[in-house]
Image (cartoon, rainbow, N blue to C red; front, side, top):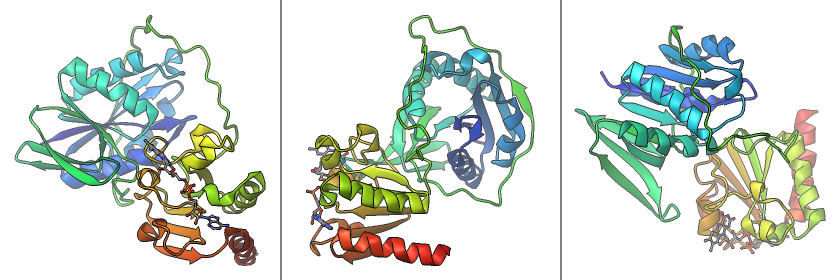
Amino acid sequence: MTKILVIADIKDGVLKGSTKELLSKAKAIGAETAVAAIGSNIESLSADLANAGSDTQYIADDADLELFTAGPFASCVVDAAKLFEADLIWFGFSETGKAVAPRVAAKIDAACASDITDIEIDGGQITITRPAIANKVMQKIKINTKQLVAVVRAGAFEADPGISGSENVVKLSAPEPDLKAVIKEVVSDASGEIDLGDADIVISVGRGTKDQAGIDLVKGLADDLGAGFGSSRAMVDAGLLAQNKQVGQTGKIVAPNLYMAMGISGAIQHLAGMTGSKTILAVNKDPEAPIFNVADYGIVGDLFEVVPILREEIKKIKG
Ligand SMILES: Cc1cc2nc3c(=O)[nH]c(=O)nc-3n(C[C@H](O)[C@H](O)[C@H](O)COP(=O)(O)OP(=O)(O)OC[C@H]3O[C@@H](n4cnc5c(N)ncnc54)[C@H](O)[C@@H]3O)c2cc1C
């Protein structure tokens, strides 16, 4: 039976939904599942990890693992992979996953693929699918090693609420500290903001919002809905929003339940970051804007008129 090790995505002591998505796919394939959880003060998550669909939980819980450093994290994953004899090792789509996956692959001499959107296993042959050239084509790649380390694109797999696993905790010993790179402190400029990767709804602004007043108008709508707030590159290049807000090929890739594009034309590089969203709503005054080719719902109109109406209607529904 194929063995799939999923690396748990934990943020501020909370298990993120992407872990269940990966475990759901692993179970759907018919694989034996395990999860590796790495951090500090995380042992209490073992029941959550089992409920997410893992049958074994490899847990490395150590104060030295509180701040993420790729080397020690990779060592923990390698330990778990060896103990479990994993065929596939899956990371969710995060900076952590992208930093650790190649290190793990190099240590165990496995293939490594990032950005995958699907995976098939047929008689031991692993085949992955992933987008290339800014989503213009989908590649299918046959993997010729026994083991594969993969970073799965956000929203690629659906969480199955019907699955669960069983609690069977294996404690991993803390790895040697990484003397080459030690993280001293993490400084976040997004205090209290909803992470774009976690948000159920993401609202992004483009050049059509013009200036700070336009941004504030749309931000009000995002606050009403508890949505993450993103941007096209045009607004970042104009110095109106920080780079960590940018959605797209050279920004973040998001896959929320609802993505709202406000005054965004729909350039291919922007689409590369958001077409995985379940539902897309676009507001643009140009009926020919390419964003409407990918939108499920389109409003042709001036966002400065449309957004206040949307806010009013949302208030009524909430009230
Ligand atoms: C290598 C490379 C990487 C890139 N990476 C990214 C990336 O990661 N993310 C990204 O977003 N871009 C990226 N870009 C830039 C991309 O090509 C576009 O230039 C950019 O996405 C355009 O942003 P925009 O849609 O906000 O602006 P525009 O293309 O100028 O579109 C503005 C839209 O607003 C509409 N509008 C104007 N006024 C109103 C109004 N009052 N109400 C409603 N609608 C209105 C207009 O009709 C228009 O469609 C990249 C480009 C390159 C070359």
